Length: 400
Ligand SMILES: Cc1ncc(COP(=O)(O)O)c(C=O)c1O
Image (tube, rainbow, N blue to C red; front, side, top):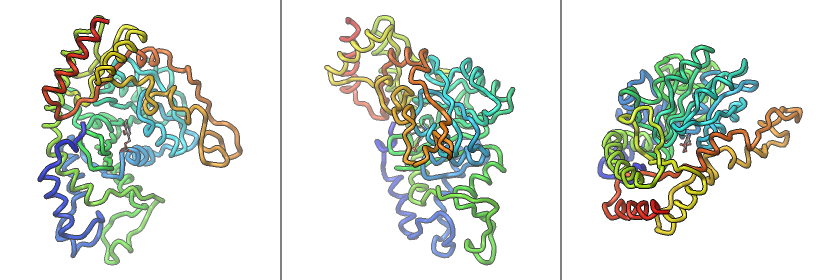
C-alpha cells in the first residue's frame, strides 16, 4: 500500500480518454462519449478479476457498505454484528441505515472471533460484517457456517484487502456481498471510490438503482429523464475519472501484492529476532494481500518498550490500542453517543429514549491483544536502505 506509489503512463492514458470525450458522468451522453464508459468497464473488469458475477461501483468504501446494507434491507430496529477492531466506517454505515452495531472480540487473526460471534446473535441480527483487516482474511468459512445456521446474510468489508484470497477464492465473494475501498491510501486507489461485488443479480439490481436515486436504468425513448423508480435512492455514483483510474490500478494489483509480499517477508524476518515475538495468524498465507505486517509481543510493557526504542530509531510502529480510528475503546464519539441530531438519533429513538449504550471495557480479550500488537504498513516500494534501517532497529529492540 498504497497504489499511488506507482502511478504512471497507464493512469494518464486512461484519464486522457475521459478528458478527450469531456464526459465525466457515468450515464447518458451517448453521442458525445463515443463508446467510452470507464465506470462500467471498471465494474466489469473488477467482477472478472474477483470472480464475482456482478459489481457496483460507488463513491467510497463507506458508501459501498451503506449501499450493500440498504440492498440487503437492513434498517431501524435491526442489529448488525461486526468486530471491535475495524475502521469507524464499518459501524458508521450500520448506524447510517438506522441499525445498531453490535461488536465482537477479535482473535489472533486480528479479525472477528467466530466464538464470540455465536454469543452475539439475537433475533434482531439482520447482517454480519466480518472485516478483512490489514489486508488479511477473517475466518470467513467459520463465520459463514454460523451465519447460515441462523439464515443471516454476511457482508464482507474488504476495504483493506483487495486482491486477498483464501485458497484462490477472492475475499468479498464468500458472503452475500463484499465491499471495497479505493481511497487514497489503499493498495489500489482511485482517490476516493468503492465497489460492492455479489453473485446475486437481484441484489446487484437493487444496489445499482439505489446508488442512482432509484433510476431503473431501462432504456426508453425519453432517455434518462423517462426512467422510472420502484423505490427511493440516493446519489453514490462513481465518476468517469475514478473509473479510468480504477482500470489502470486494477491491472497492476497482483504485481503490487507480489512486491508487498516480498517486503513483508523481509520485515517479518527482521522482527523475528525479538524474543517471544509471534505473528498475526493468517487463514491462508498465500492469499494475504500483505499490506501490513503485524507482530505480537509477550506483554504490554515489553511492547511499549520495544516501540519506544523503534521510535527513537525513527521507525516507530503503529499500536492500535492507542490509535483513535480503529479500536473500540478509542471511539469516544460512539461511546459518548455524540451526534448532530437534536433528538439524539441514531443513539436515541426519536422520542429521546436511548437505544444503545456502549461499555468501554466490553472487549478485554481484544484489548489485551491490541496492547501487545505492533504494525508496520508495507509499501510497494521499500528501498534496501529503508528495510536495512528497520531491521537494525528491530535487532536493537530485541535486546531489551
Ligand atoms: C475496514 C474499512 N472499511 C471501510 C472503509 C471506508 O472506505 P472509504 O475511505 O473509501 O470510505 C475503510 C477505509 O479505510 C476501512 O479501512
